[in-house]
Length: 289
Picture 1 (cartoon, one colour):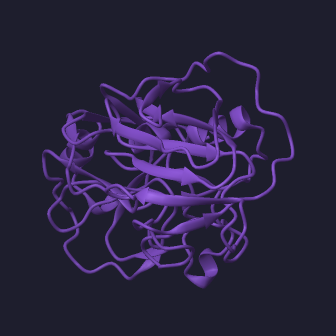
Picture 2 (cartoon, rainbow, N blue to C red):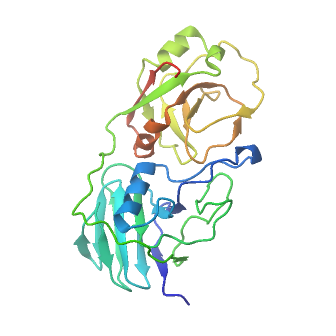
């Protein structure tokens, strides 16, 4: 039994292992996956001295509780939350030393949705197609955490960052998504296209790692026929039969049969990862580069 491991005491609502994802396999039907809030995942890795590609934990809403078998350095960023070690409050957004056998509790998100937990050495589950990410759509990678699971850890390679706290953006009060129109915006009426980029939508409780679903005005089609399934990309805004836009996130399918009215700029997607249900969403059209 190795002492470089993390024992899961409380898995939380949905806690998964995530890294940079597995891009480049769409032709095989494999989504990119990876951390939804990439900047937050990158920050926690830097804080504990991990390489950028090291795997971290991504929690959802109510955090998780783990117990390391050996002393480790951890950092928690993303959605703000209370962090404790054996019941004592410790810093959020900064490196924290956790003794062997101590109980590390990542509490419920006070705002936002997803917190990220890096452990020195990284989560060292077996990679699949070059990534340790959990993909909820395809089932690739490790399963979501369960109580009692044991996660192997890698060996630390660099010292942790010497900071008191690392500044990062707060979870959004409103999500503004810059979109490039097309490729199927001509499948919608001119009025629907104007509505899409001028009205306010809200984040639906049905949102997940596959897509940010919205509530708001339905978009009327100009063409009512069936669209042959075609490739879709990260950030594609697909419009299903109910007319409400869905923004594809990291675990999205690689093909889809509903028209894509626009594609969101990748730089705007991390904010979507932290938007709680009910958060206003605005789509802003920008010119093609």
